[in-house]
Image 1 (spheres, one colour):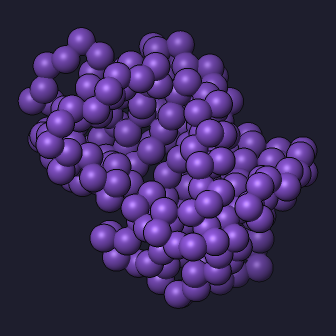
Image 2: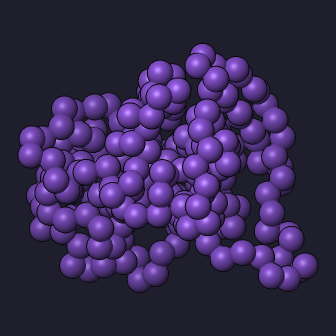
Length: 226
């Protein structure tokens, strides 16, 4: 058994989840400076605060936001963080996440990950020989009583969750901006389909709710059809 999972993301009208392909470009850092977008951005964070108490993200995403570079420990929250990471977070990145999270679970295949050198009551690690998302979710449910989990990650990891049929709901907030760029991360990245037989990998969605937010933002909520 695994938690009920929701893929929750902020994206542009053309499905981009970053302002560019380089790690120095990031929605959280860049959108607050774009006129016509910054005015309604807080709505996304307000909605984010209402999502599941368990949140899953990649170490790369957290590193892009700046957790490795924080000079002061962040404030403690009630959110439990699950981080899938091999080599993007350093010692201070993990320390900062420990300070912020109610509970921090690091899922990794790297036996020398910095998380192993940190002793904290709220820090646990799940070591795997190779990444197995289904097993990770089952372990979260069995050992940590995680019943619902929100995925807030990058396009590559999102593709892995969808391909493994591990997403139950999709919740998207669309910002009023078109970004473009063929290498800019999208909601779902990874290899493109090349064979008709692969069409079974596509995930059809049933619309649950559609909201017109303020400042030209839109929220779409779907259930994944199985």
